[in-house]
Image: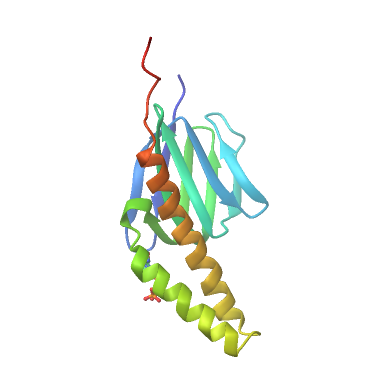
Length: 144
Ligand code: ATP
């Protein structure tokens, strides 16, 4: 079966490089699902979750800003910020979320604090999704 090669990099490091059957990413116009032989496209990335599925195994990542390029056999994500779900420090994200929330209480018009709040909520959601998926039994149900 045809596969996609997925490359997810930031200016600092290569976060993920692997084959995939399907990629889901937060494109500028909404979530974008990519299968092999997708039409080529280039879009900016919103803040949110990237899911990479290969042979039934799903990898979750958090991304914030950047670009997504789709080619028939390749997905390239150049992210401003990216972390694999398992590398997210939830305590740090929770602290950053609280700081932004407190700032917004005093300065409701502070757009930077609002952006940080949104980013940390989405970051925490990616960590949480992964925890739930990990706890779920994987593979086909046991036969009778
Ligand atoms: P904080 O306010 O939590 O210190 P920051 O605003 O300084 O965060 P960023 O500028 O968004 O952090 O990111 C700096 C680097 O730290 C990036 O490489 C990013 O991937 C990483 N990073 C930020 N928050 C987390 C987190 N909660 N878990 C893991 N990595 C993180």
